[in-house]
Image (cartoon, rainbow, N blue to C red):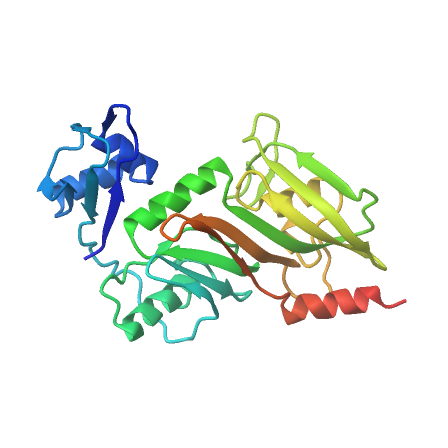
Length: 299
């Protein structure tokens, strides 16, 4: 049973649902609590969420049990764990591993591996709430939530852009700008179910980058996303004439040092509401990208 407790610090009138919303409890989660075995108490007595609170009232929230997601089969391939507690699991995803299962990769996605890990640890709740995803060919930090409320909290941070993801990338050619912002709308390419492209009238998409160094035929970049469109980094750098090395879908040629797009989510930071502090997880650059950078740096 997963439960939480808070004290009302407001001296002005405040409803139970308002205080719960301040702690990340969504309307959807409130419905699940009401109809599927959860509980909301004020000072030890079950209460409706539209009732008013007094200053100093103590609120107890019990989450309903979650139905298992048996459609995800467990994998016994081990995880590279960067952070874990009762609320979140943060892992380093290798390249060539999908974030979630599909008909193409039904049994060895990162979610399958997390499900297997939860089973081996005998966790009560074995539902895999993936919060941040990466393309199959992209490596780096991925966050899983361990319960509904943790997932809701980070979804809200994603919408407010307070959850920060930083990427390393190697783009073709020499980029002259030391720092720039790409602000180009993105939508699905008309002739493809997979590919995206810059399209007038598409969804607003903003990518900020800093040049780390120019190399022989490429540029090493640090990248921050301000929106989260599918393939956003890859599409934006193709649009400015510098596709990511190894990214055949978006115009890159074959490279002898890497056989996937040179893109790595090296850092994620988020506010941990249950600890009251920011968590930052950093993972080193993978070997294939390190080799590419080393070879490109040779005179």
